[in-house]
Length: 85
Image 1 (cartoon, rainbow, N blue to C red):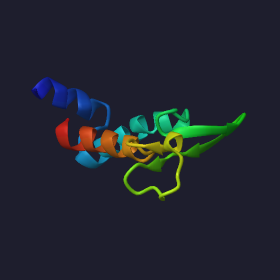
Image 2: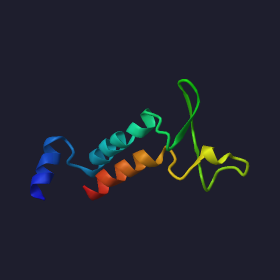
Image 3: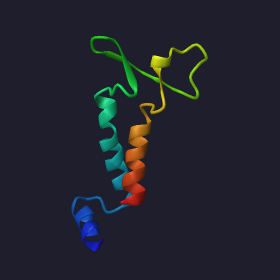
Image 4: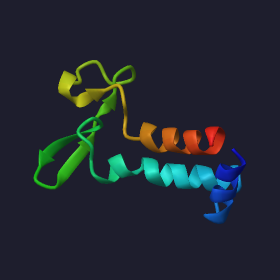
């Protein structure tokens, strides 16, 4: 465990805040590539985020709803890196 801490410190990830920022940046990769889990394609190069399943309006089409909205990935990355690493 001490070796992991030394490795993180050598990369500048000694504090939970810096690890959280790093985790959020890693978690943003699915947002940058417009993952089909959280986005739907309108036309070539144009994507819209899907609505969160439980808060979407009543008439929203099922293919435009998701259980994993776009903002969950950076939040999970930040949480995992800041709290559990």
